Image 1 (tube, rainbow, N blue to C red):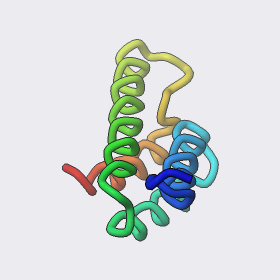
Image 2 (cartoon, helix red, strand yellow):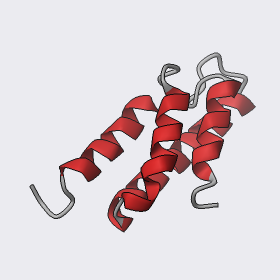
Image 3 (tube, rainbow, N blue to C red):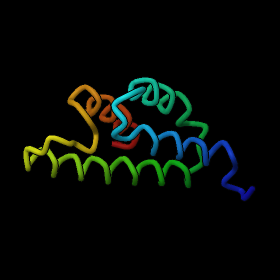
Length: 88
């Protein structure tokens, strides 16, 4: 594989899978926080972008009182807030 590497790709894929899934969000957040120092800048930037885009969609969903919310329930959003603290 490229210099991005299989592990980096799998970290990005795991985050994308868990965003809005409503299952395993706390497990994904715990895992991501633990491995964050091991990720390349490229992987971190992709994850940051994906999470920030999900927050923007979630904010719109909540403003519109939508039944579907990009980050899921309040408890799921709180887990992503923990992840967001990695770069805030």
